Image (cartoon, rainbow over all chains, first blue to last red; front, side, top):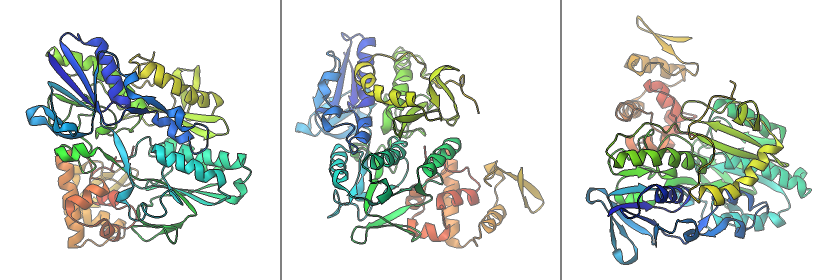
Length: 410
Length: 104
């Protein structure tokens, strides 16, 4: 029996396990997934919880239900990976798992403890995150009775998981406070370490205009050093200050501690990975999928999906002794909620920034790229169904994994 | 096209003022690029610039602020006083390496 071990049963790990369970002969291959939690969260849904569009129960499913019957599942935190000995030690009982091939899909998570002043007596009182279920639920509770003031959203540092979610948050906040009838009592400020509203120039210009139209202030090139929770101010390394009444923070994102303990990551615990083949740079029988890798594209579910699409056929070649094809192009595809029942859509890769156009059918759409539309919003809302019923079931979407230039104009 | 005259050589810069060809870089070029940012280079600046060059040569990518601070052993706070407003970008520009891609 050959052993394929998958660390992490989130978006990337689940898709990889289910697709490979269909492709590999399970009389010859043993597929095992390890995850520390029995709950599979629909993470794109966290964004909607503070505004009571979703509730906690809308984003939770049992992890086991979404892994194919032929896949073994172990629930345990992981202690360490020993790549030189092809084995992984679990924290539960110190048990060793040996592998022939390893897929690391351990993701990334927020680390508020890395910024002085975030955690403490004001955490979940006047300071919140929304990239965790607890943060999102606490923030919903706070917003329900908030009477207005100065709401500041701050991104601590890049890269972050789902880099469009902070913009979506502030757009939805604009809409939500309108609905509550208190928009005139709320000042919204978007504070970012980037030089614009987003990373890529054309999208940054469009999104920057959307902030302005909505009367949302934009503070750029702001690298936060610490937060003073008593005075309620953000303080940057170059001594600029931004005061707030309610702070929504996107803390520093880091890869799993397992990566650090195993000594196989960079300074943010991401695993150095070949950006075209997704093989770990330093190991020939390890692949890295989803947010755990250091490849220079967005950390997002859509990217994980395109990664799995190109990884699966490549892995089948590889185990037959063929070379890996350099087929991953960094493709990302993100719906951005812009409030009031509309959204925009961006589609890009390593080399091509988000451009206007139609998607997925050139000229027809139905989705509009880099432009607000009601259809884009429905694309986002329908995605939750697609996530659970198509992607997590190991089914494929009828669209190519690589980005297409057709239908785009520059 | 923007150019920078270093002694008798003319170097090409991109629209944001980064050297198009990192191999064109020299210490004189660094002085001129720093001057255009209003920075007079000291030994502390050089420690950072040398690290950034080395990092680029090893990794084929420009270092992020966190990587510079950790790798060169210069606290982030000091990087902001040495290279005010966006140190990662300024270090890359003066070191003649591409604009850091870090943010996607």
